[in-house]
Amino acid sequence: MIRFTRSLTVVLMAIVLSMVTSSVLAAKEEPKPVGYIDFSSKEVALIFGLSWGKGELRMDGQRIPIKGRVLSLGVQATIAKSDLTGNVYNAKTPEDVAGSYNATGASAAFVKGAGEAILKNEKGTVLKVWSTTKGFDASAAIGGLTIELAD
Image (cartoon, rainbow, N blue to C red; front, side, top):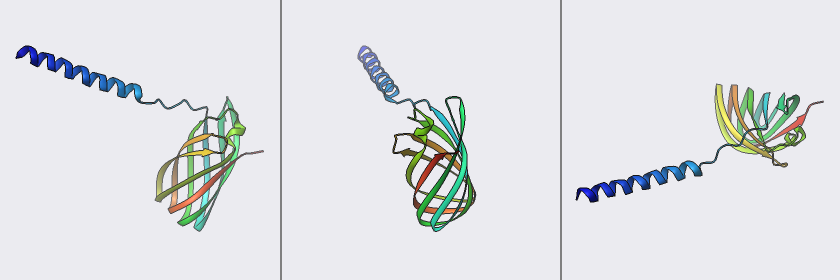
């Protein structure tokens, strides 16, 4: 009986170890970013929203000025300043970062809030961004972010 219990214990430990090992191997590592983005904007909205701002793209050892705008439509009331920072993926050149990014989401912030989003443009560039907002922002809106390389 003791032998059977030991054998069963060894088999169960092997199964658990196998499950843990396969779970770890199955977990995908996040790809390394090819660049970084910092952006500051101001926003006003009441049903229709408009946000504009400027920032910097850091890629391939370069610091490239960018500008952007967001148009949104939905249930919203906003007077705020936002700072956005994030990682850039799947871009081969700075020109790949320029473009239109679409997103849907809901947020609420009063005085100070934070949010996270993953956005993708028509060229396949992905931005994983984090934002902080100061001011008043209550929204459930659909919007689009357009980024341009500044002159």
